[in-house]
Length: 161
Image 1 (cartoon, helix red, strand yellow):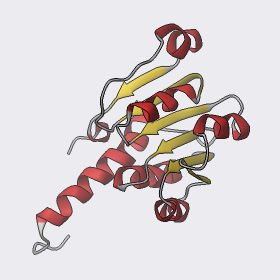
Image 2: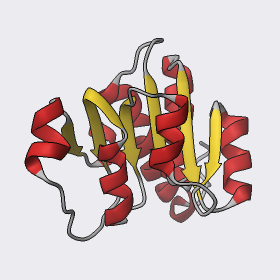
Image 3: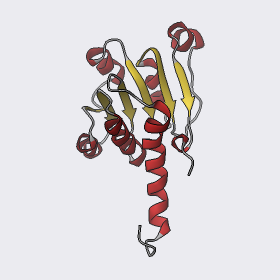
Image 4: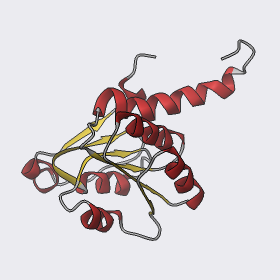
């Protein structure tokens, strides 16, 4: 960037790109056979879509409550876009990926969304939480252990700024 660009404009951009794309590229590292569901199409979620596209993920499924954000996600490489106010994400995933997704990413910090991100995983899948939220209620046995699912909290996309 040019030296005269205002850092108050660039700072949030670096955070969003680093957190979203960094989480996918540095931590998840999806292969061409992997599926990923991303919740929240703000800067972090959109950057995650870009990261998943660059990584070559087979299917990039996104959820948001705003149609304009879903349109951006489609432009950025999402394969499937759903308005979370109009569909039940768990039902959608059951229909289009019956075994569940390999990875999910919650950028919203909304506890119910984070729980959904766990519920839609295939066996041995991993949910990564980057949104800052409240209490998360999971049943250790049925939500995680019985299917070897993982939940990870990550800061700044596991990047070295």
